Image 1 (spheres, rainbow, N blue to C red):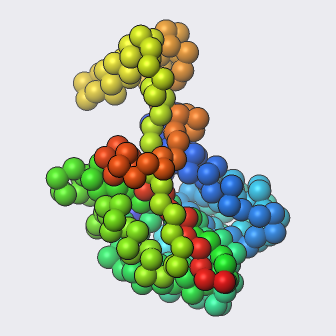
Image 2: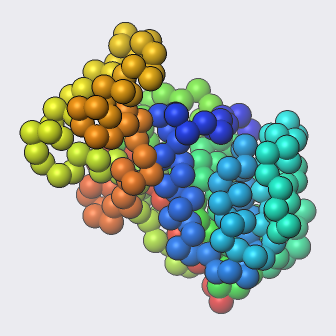
Length: 252
C-alpha cells in the first residue's frame, strides 16, 4: 500500500478539502457510535470524530510512524490509535457502528478485500463513509497522475464495487463551489487564484499571494471547508467532481 499523508497544516491547498469531508461525516455520526477511521494519517480527522462521539473512536493506519505521530498530537479519553492493515484488521465481527475511510482504496490493489473487511466489522445497519478520486476528473484520459495511486475509479465503477458488499449505496461528488455565484468580483478572483497557483507564480511566498487575495477579494488563496459542496446531480458528479463521496449502509 502506497503512502500519501496530509500534514497538519491549515495553510495548505488541500486542508479545506480534507476538513470538509470529515465535517460531512459528522452528519452520519451518533453520540454513542463506535467509530473506525482507517488510514487516519496524521489523525486530525480522527480527532474531529472523537469530539462528536463519546463512544470509542479508533484511528488506524498501516504505517507505524503515522500512528506514533498521532499519539503525540492527539489525546482524548475516547480516542485510541492503532497500527492496522485495513484488509485484515483483527477486529471482531460487527464491532463498529461507523467506518470512515477517506482517500484510501486508491492506494491498494487489495481494495475489494478491504471493502469486504469493512462490511465484516460493521454492525448490522452500520455505515461506511468513504471517499476516493473520480478518475474521469482527477486523471482525465485514464492515465493516473498521482504516483501514490494504484488505481482510481469512475462513478459507475465505484458504485458497482461498493454494491458488492453493501445493499445501499449513496454516491455524491465533492465539488469546489467558491465561484458558483456569478459576478465580476468572483470572475476576477477566479482568474487571480489560477494565476497564483500556476507553476511559476506559486514559487512566490504564500503570505504575499494570500494577502492579495484577502485584500482584493475577501477570501484566502487556498480553499476553506466552506468552499465545497456535495453534488447530487450525477452528470455533474461525473464531469466536474474530482472526489467521489459514498455513504454505504450494511444490511440490518
